[in-house]
Length: 606
Image 1: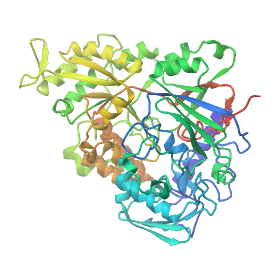
Image 2: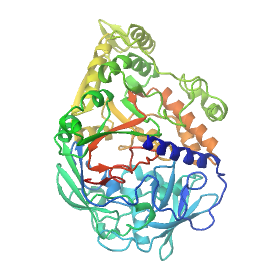
Image 3: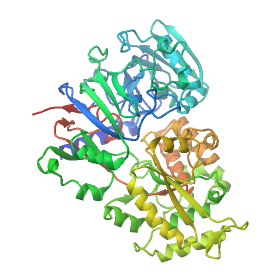
Image 4: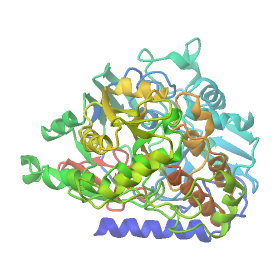
């Protein structure tokens, strides 16, 4: 109960501050932190993040069982498969994010931040003690080089910000200033979150094609001490880490060692955890949580089952349709495929009906669209795009619901009608278009994803009744990444976590550049000027009300776009872990998210 009360208390305070603090307050000189709206919740002299234990002991090892493999140690380029944790464990940014507030940053490599009411510029003062893991100081030159390199030859996720930076210049021995090309209030925060790399390490090296030959010189508390290609990466806490005493780091990075072990698939990961070879396991299936954790370690108390609540949006999880392909371009076809997906029966079969379905991209949060027609500012924002909006956007879109039986007769009839309207008719028992081409779908899945395969097996039988052939192609993690990076699929398992502060990253998710540009998260290939308008409104909003209206309008466009067949979500995380690793009693608003495990956990034998 204490965990739940701490979580609720943090959420109420952060939400109250975010909503009631006036937006128009200008930065009065350098400050210790910044918020998207209003002022950050923590004072300049805060002891630690509210969800960190400043008295946590240091020591011990935490082992994470990861699926797939890796072919690179550089998480900042598109080439290769990289342990995703390296972006956060091996690199630091000028500012650090508190996950107990919608979007607030506090000093990390930078000791202060300064901007004005317009937020068309921002200046950072680098902390005088900031050091890389080799002991060399973090300089303004390193900062400027990092932004330019990532923004031009780094991973596509960095390019959008760089295009909005008009100038970046040194304004003092430890000061760097950015000015922006756009009226975009979020940019001052995004600039604070880019990883800072050591320029000298990459002199005369091919950054964008780097792989396993260059172990990063870190600015973060952990350094890579050992690795075996494709099998494991060991990170060791740097005893000389410069930032141990700063407020943002107190009570974090408590393990002496973090080890990432790689396994072929999810089922092997779970077996490794049961055998005591890893420290924790996140369970996404409520049925398995109830019925598959009766092994000895749980019964003896050596493994703890923890429930971690959160207040973040559901995001979207399901099976995405690639609208670059002609067969998926008609919204009626996509609606038919969603209608034929018998979620209620699948949910009962796979999870005992224990998990709720995702109802929109921002469900489970204040950013979620309200049921029924769009009103007020939402309607005002959507009005210029009425001619291009799909049915359900303005009126309100509700996912088709089945009767829960295997036959799902009513929905199959509705799907049949929609396909016929779209020009896909049954000819000699097979669904074909006017040119006689058969309707066939291949869904790509990751090796070991038995739950998705089970869903596809049930779905296949439903589609057979519509004259559609569905096949599944199982790929290893490297093949899956490559195929999805270049959008070489019909349908694919798709998962996108979303935050309480959507902004510029949404263009990488849903922007039209991703139709052809490889490596974006726009797997569906959506091309929606209305969605891009809402994203622009998100980042330029000067009031919280306008921000909420833009987010809810975007949510309407996304769910009514019918790009993904949504599956289940949960307002909790189910985390099984060995009894020796522990977490604080106060939980962050974002729950079990980036910045939680391993960041604020610790090892304790008593």
